[in-house]
Length: 176
Image (tube, one colour):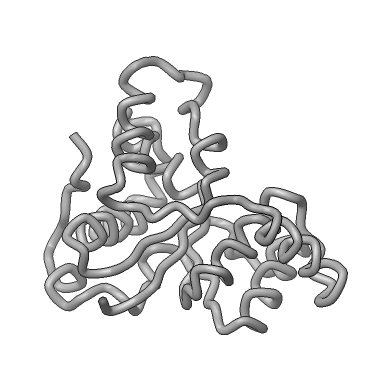
């Protein structure tokens, strides 16, 4: 394995939007890299993690939670082919709480669970759209994760893709 990557729920939701042609066009480069990351994870060349709470967060695309959207999220998150789910547990919850109590990382509950899950999985990259450190919430996430050796990045900033995937002109995600 070449790397341990954690993904927040928001890149997965944006990828679902892309599949319905409802995405933010400014994110197409990052979405291409996210597809590459998913392909590498599907081929067991990297380990890709997210929290089990992402299953509850990824339920709709701009209000649409019909069969097509459901199939996409199930195929991506819970098929066992791409993501390894970090199970929420009392240990993850206490670690999330302690991020505030011990490290003064001021995030909301779900974000703290994501951060604690990334730490628990020993990831070195955290994929998210929340990278604007001029925003206090994002700055807390970035500083908090840096304390644990985790870079907060968008998918196109990954340094952990194997060369085959990093150099390819484009990849389709492996979800049908």
